[in-house]
Length: 106
Image (cartoon, rainbow, N blue to C red; front, top):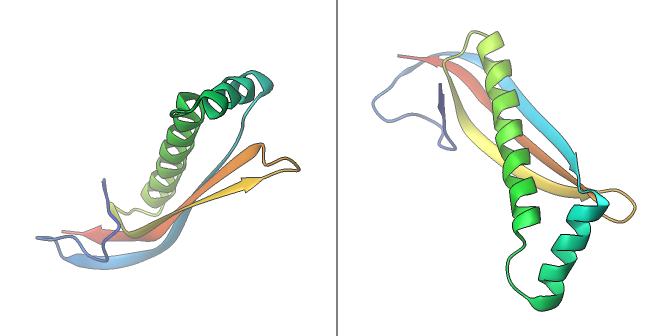
């Protein structure tokens, strides 16, 4: 399946629009991960803990969107948008949402 942020796919023609599809993941960061990330914040540098969590959430949201596009009979998703939010009383939850238009292209 082709998934792209562009509104069309070079060399392909969109034959049918199947509708908007979404993928969502809400991921929590547990106490241990938060503590390890806090050390990176204190000493400086990148937080591999949070980066891994973000990558996993984004990939999960993309897989979910792709699964929903396939269920509609699409073979591509165009115009994909990725959004990130933090949720919870102390911002301990990460929400990743992706959306795009499921299409059939040749």
